[in-house]
Length: 110
Image 1 (tube, rainbow, N blue to C red):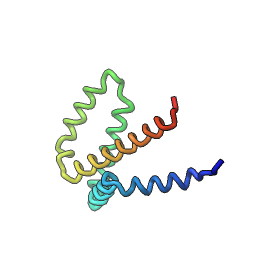
Image 2: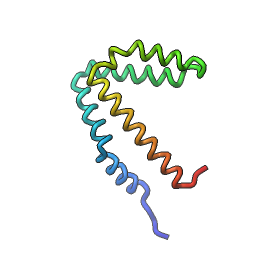
Image 3: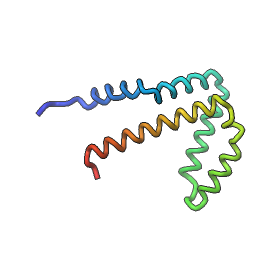
Image 4: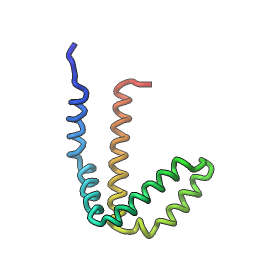
């Protein structure tokens, strides 16, 4: 049986992912927003609050809390740099999620 170096193959696969338009857009958006350290700090606070909301809110309260959070941050999200970065980050997360799901399907893992 042929020995496969999973770490090396994973490294090569990550290189392919870094060449995708989705990843390239993410890195460009991240680099652009990092040019304004205060805005980048605020984006990270927003991301942390969003994470906390999703993971620490009772399921029956989540919709109302999410609506309030969206209204509270509407002006912040209207900033083109913020919107571009958060949109690019979401697209990257979705791509990685799809890849993970496909790997699980290919593995016939139940």
